[in-house]
Every structure is written in C-alpha cells, then in structure tokens.
Amino acid sequence: MMNKSDAIPPLEELAAILGTRGFSRDPDDMAPWLTDWRQRYQGRALAMVSPATLAEVVAVVRFAAAHRLPIVPQGGNTSMVAGAVPDDSGRALLLSMRRMNKIRSIRQADNAMVVEAGVILTHVHEAALEVGLRFPLSLGAKGSATIGGLVSTNAGGTQVLRFGPMRALVLGIEAVLPDGSVIESLASLRKDNRGYDLRQLLCGAEGTLGVVTAVTLRLVPVLRQRVVAWVGLDSPQAALDLLRRLEQRLGDSVEGFELVPDIALELVLRHIPGTRAPLATDCPWYVLVECGAVTAGDELQMAFGAVLEDEINAGRVTDAMIAANGAQAEALWHLRDSISEAERHDGTAAKHDVSVAVSDMPRFVMEAAAAVEQRFPGVRVIAFGHLGDGNVHFNVRAALGADSQAWLVREGHDVTAFVDDLVVKAGGSLSAEHGIGQIKLAEFARISEPARLNMLRAIKQALDPHGIMNPGKLLPLAPEDSIP
Ligand SMILES: Cc1cc2nc3c(=O)[nH]c(=O)nc-3n(C[C@H](O)[C@H](O)[C@H](O)COP(=O)(O)OP(=O)(O)OC[C@H]3O[C@@H](n4cnc5c(N)ncnc54)[C@H](O)[C@@H]3O)c2cc1C
Image (cartoon, rainbow, N blue to C red; front, side, top):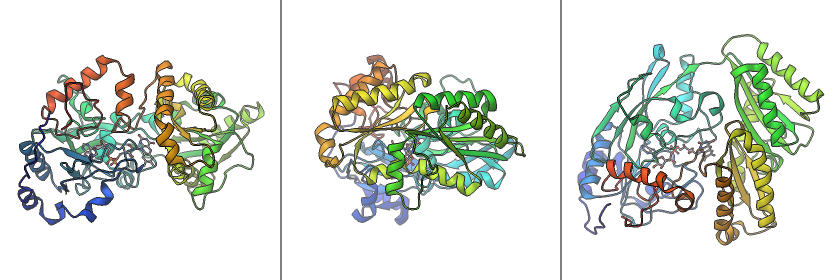
C-alpha cells in the first residue's frame, strides 16, 4: 500500500501540463465536487485535475504514481455510495473526467458508438437517436451521470430486464492503468478469447483498478412502437405474476418493469412540482411497465391492452392507465425517476440496494419490511424499483415527525445490519447496482465470505500495488493493510 508522506509534490508540473482549465486548487471550484450526492461524506483534495485527452490522463496517473498520491476518479458524482469523493486527508487528486466528453465515432454497421468517459448519458441517448439507433440503458441520474461512472459502477437502471446492465453493453474499453500504461481495446469484438476478460474487470471496479477514458457501447435499433403504462395492484407478488403473463403473451418486448409502493408515489406527489397521480384509484402497489417493438404498427398497443383487460376482468389488476402519447409516457417515467429525489427532500434514510432471486423478491419485500417495522417500531419501509431484475431499493425511513438525521446517526447502523442479515439469509447481495463505495464498506466486510474478499484484494494488489487508485472504496482493508 501507499506510504504516508508529508512532502508537497511539485504540483506546478501538473498545472503546466493541464493548463488553467484542467487544474485547480481553488476551494470554490472544488467544493461542489467534494461532497457526495447523498451529502453523507465531505472530502478534501490536494487539487482537482480535469484532463481533456488520453495523454493528459496518462500524465496525471504517472505523476500520482511517482509521488504516491491517491487518485479519485469522478464523473457526474451521482454515486449512491459515495464512491467518487476523496477522504478528508487532503492528499488526493480529484480526477474529474467531465472534460473528456467527445463522441469519437458512431459505427452504424457495428451497432456501436465510441464515446469518451465524460460524456453524459443523456447525450449518448441523443447522439444514438440522431442516427436511428438507441442506447438501451437509462436511469434517474441520466442528466448528470457519465459513461465512465456508469461503466465503473456497472450501472443497471430501468432496462436491464431486456438488455442487461452496463457490462452487457460494453463492447470495448480504453483505460489508463495505475502505472500509467494504457489498455487500448476499443474494437467492438463480439468474440475475443485472449484469456481473462479485461474489459469486464474494469466494469464495476469503481475506479480502483484504473481510469476508464473511452468505451465502445452497444447500440440497438430504435423503437417504432412503445407502450408505457401505470398499473395498480395489490401486492409485489401480483406484480411479478403480471410480468410473467406479459412475457408469455408479448414475448421479450417488456423492457421496463418498475415496482412503486403507494408511499413512494405519495412522496413524489408531495415534493416534485408538476406531478400528478396517474390513476383515480388508490392502490397499495403500482408498476410502471414499458414494452417496445422495432416494427411499425399498433399491434403492441392492442396486445398490451388486451392483456390488461383480461387482468382487470380476472381481478388481478385493480386499475391501469396506458400513456396516450410520448409526453404522457415521459410523465409516468418522471414519477418513477423522481423517487430518489423526493426521498431526499423528505429527509435522510437508511438506504439499501438489494437483490435476491427474482421469484423470491415479492416474499422478501413483504417479509423483510414486516420484520424491520417490528424490530424498529415506527420506521417506514419504502421498497421500490427493478422487480423484474430481482432488485429493489429497500429504504428505511425514520418515524413520521422524527429528526431523520439524528435517527440515522442513532439507529442507521443497526437497521442496515438487520436488513443485510435478511439479505444474506435470502441468498442475496447487499449491492445490486450501486456498488460498494464508502458507504457499504464495513457491511461488505462483515457479511462477505473470505474467498470473495481475498480474490478482490489479490486483483487489486496485482494491478495497483501502491494502492493509489481510489483508496478506501470497494475493498475492505485486510487487517495488515494501513490506510494510505
Ligand atoms: C437520482 C439517481 C438515480 C439513480 N438510479 C440508478 C439506477 O437506477 N441504477 C443504477 O445502477 N444506478 C443508479 N444511480 C447511481 C449510479 O451509480 C450513478 O448514477 C452512475 O452510475 C454514476 O455515474 P457518475 O458519472 O455520476 O459517476 P460518479 O458518481 O462520479 O462515480 C461513480 C464511481 O465510478 C468511479 N468513476 C467515475 N468515472 C470513472 C472513470 N472514468 N474511470 C474510472 N472510475 C470512474 C468513481 O471513482 C466512483 O467510484 C442513481 C443515482 C441517482 C443520483
């Protein structure tokens, strides 16, 4: 691991390479980027460096390696686990990738797009649409999250059901390794058996193995038919049953299937301006469903409507609304995408991003919520999200009227340990899509099998022996390690 050193490195060398737009020690410039999105962690940095080219990233990493300085890569800083902010030692270089924001090429014949790491997800969506293609990954933070961050957290989002998480959409990668060497693997090879899959190793690495500088992304044909609906029903089990029936009758056209409890919808309606309830009937649970087809016509809408009618007649669905146009569809997605923001306005919560087998999720949601509410009287569980992927955000809020911050400090740790133990018992994961970052480090160490942690540490040690890449994130320290 890195040694502590009080010697001040010759930062003027870096400043000269990066120029005024690429180098800052101004506290006002750095301040917005030193606090995580959930405002739980406040870090400090020696400088914020913002390279604009691969060569400049190489120069930054070589400089950091030579002076044993920690590097904290950062994209949009929307990490839910405080993965992109430095610790408070003030020794780290905060490496903002936001100036590496070019779309290098769109290879239509390969259904692929080569983009730099700092490109924002929304811009990828727009660029793909301009050539009649689309990038099938979206999430609430799409206006700020960058491709480098999405790759490095192996982000999921709302279309995993059909297209998989970020890993499944990365066809090639370019990255700077901790010694300053460059792995250039942007060719969109569908088949490549040269041993370990190095691009996949960097997906989900949370910036601990190197800096992702560019990515080749998989694109898919644009949709010509799109059906978006808001459906009210009785329980998560009824929701999963609906998903399976939709799949049986509509094939793999189901792209999104998001579970929303009434308590989450209430928060959105209360805190997000311009939102309104889609249904006249109040239901305990809702799902937002999206289906798509690449062929033109209206068969999908008709077939979807027929399924819903049958479900309502059978008493399995309480009420439903199908978006009549694109604006209504976006309004429905806005309700879903605003849940995290609405929760934030309502005070802090003990948040968990958990996965279990898809078929077990309905029971897990009900039983775990009941167990938590019994063990911690007064708290409110909001479990929402990607039911079709076996992943919900299982958030526990303080009792109504309580000071949520004080409650979190007092009870948050116990609540999280309780939830994580339930997840382990159900054979699940404490991080379905957000990563480990800083927030989950202690729990990851507590509940993981030693073999998993040892393998992760061995990979880290082999690629980053001096521990300069995003220290204090993802990897629980081995007892013999010291904090850099
Ligand atoms: C409102 C909201 C909704 C969200 N919804 C979802 C969701 O549905 N599904 C989901 O999976 N996630 C979701 N997220 C979290 C998601 O992880 C982030 O939005 C996104 O993946 C991170 O992108 P970013 O550019 O902000 O990365 P950052 O937050 O800046 O960084 C995230 C991690 O990646 C590392 N990193 C960043 N760039 C690079 C790079 N170029 N090279 C190496 N390492 C790098 C950082 O060090 C850090 O560890 C949501 C977040 C918000 C705020």
